[in-house]
Length: 74
Image (cartoon, rainbow, N blue to C red):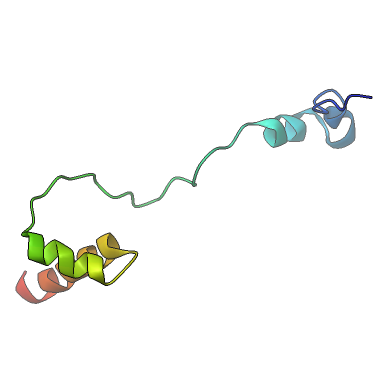
């Protein structure tokens, strides 16, 4: 016996509006309310290496370091 997607049974169980919402494809992460911009910057090799040596999340730490610098220099 084959199992179907259940798209024809679901509206009978939860109603057509709820079924449509449940069957809507969702992919990836939810959209951020404060999205980041994609930028391309050139950094000295030793600066980038220092951030990469600290492990995963080096871009987040670099962003935090820049934000911290701005708070004291802006």
